[in-house]
Image 1 (cartoon, rainbow, N blue to C red):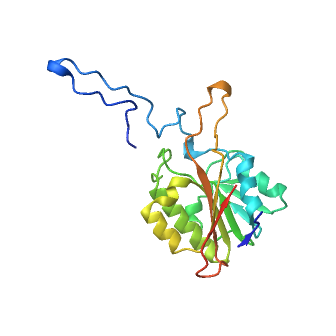
Image 2: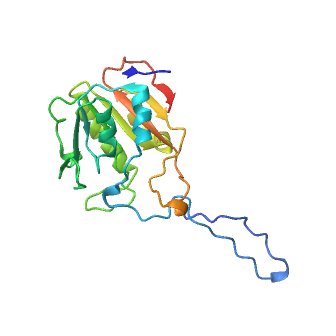
Image 3: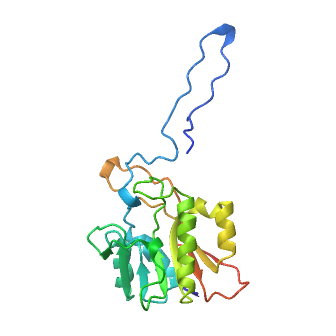
Length: 227
């Protein structure tokens, strides 16, 4: 890799002390579960990626093009890649008015002709919003395994935008340790997927780019970078 260097419903509130003399106990204060955003999830887990997120990847990693964006949505990420001079092939399982629709990434046996890299914000599968969709984190591990298989065929690169805590999972750690894991780019700002003016909720999750490169020297540890 060419580096460019410089669902537990938990209550919120104090657990009340036992009430004396059989008096009625105070009810605990309940709040919004920590894993819910307050917004209804989009079908096929569609969330357009803000431009600065893709910019953070491109500031740290020199991609070998052409690039395949297999979950292109409305083209938010693909447009940024193209603006930086990369040839981009854009596909998606759903039709959102951009790229080639009806292409299920998990059914693809090869990368599009000439492509050397895959860059995408993969579906997390939290909503189970379309038939056959697995729920995270299983869906993400399956996506990672398939993407690594495809990029291995062309000695290519793979960059996935993931929640930072996903990296810490035991099964994920095993999969990443066995793969040509070349860098993690931790985003120092949280991503806001929605803009509803004053009603916009604070972003809850930290994200990172995890980058794999089949040309990465064996035994060389991945770089820890920030963007």
